Length: 226
Image 1 (tube, rainbow, N blue to C red):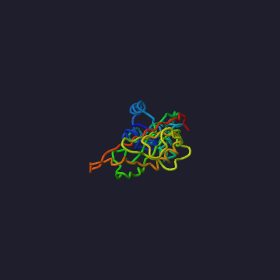
Image 2 (tube, one colour):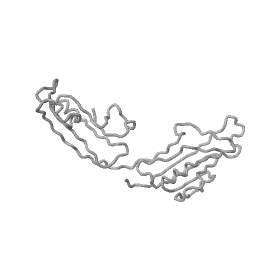
Image 3 (tube, helix red, strand yellow):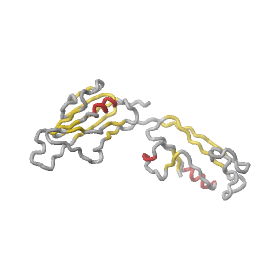
Image 4 (tube, helix red, strand yellow):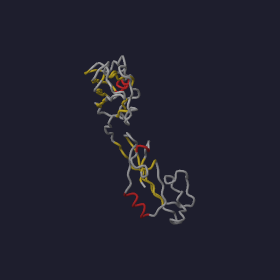
């Protein structure tokens, strides 16, 4: 019984409650008051700026609740009908302006390994780790710091790295620990060539393989919103 304008319903926590774009009820005045007391608005995911909420209320003309003769008369109540089936139709319409303030959203690391899957690489050779990237809903060019480190091997980024990427630890080529700063697009370009190399004879006598961890940490330094 709540109204919301949203872009992606899969991001809404209560999809059975939050509704898209518009809702129309046939009800009694007492029920209308109850609904309006619980009315809430939720913006699009990551959305900010100006929005409006329009509330239109129409009585049933002289037909009453069971035979609402004038219920089609309010265009805002029933946009598919421009005129009332039976005049007169009595209604009122109010539009509430809403300003949605931007808030800082946390950048997200996406990868095919985020659900617990492991990357399998050969001993003494290593392998590419495809599909790792950073997403920032606020700014695709946000200034970021990324840290990568492994425990039993070395990690490399795309060669050559983007010129706008600055390394403060390591150089992106066979490092155990990397710290780099730059715009998000440069970081994602570097991650497109992410590669892991285990240390020599890492599995030793373990024929089933041995486990190492690649840690990735990203920090957003952009506080402004577009």
